[in-house]
Length: 139
Image (tube, rainbow, N blue to C red; front, side, top):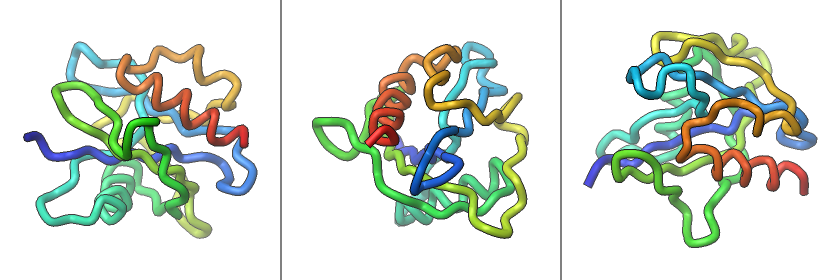
């Protein structure tokens, strides 16, 4: 079974979210330019939230505060491409952290209003996750 993936729904504020950081993929070619939540693979024996903190630092050069997990109705892991599963947590950029910036994994990272997220070209498997994030933030 492939290693699980973790992703951060980085919002402008965990207390009163209005914007989300959307990142467009640089590769593979078939996903280039499509948007996703940033994150990556969990290493063997690694705690998922520790993996998330590490992946965001590697991909975006930022430190985050991890908030509540956003789960599908039928469990804790979202089904995504390639038979993988993904855990998703709300997060915000930690005080004193550098602002997130794109590295090799992404073409762009942009703050988007929660109301406007559906207009972006999301990776198909990520769209229901983003919809769940928006619903969670509306509470």
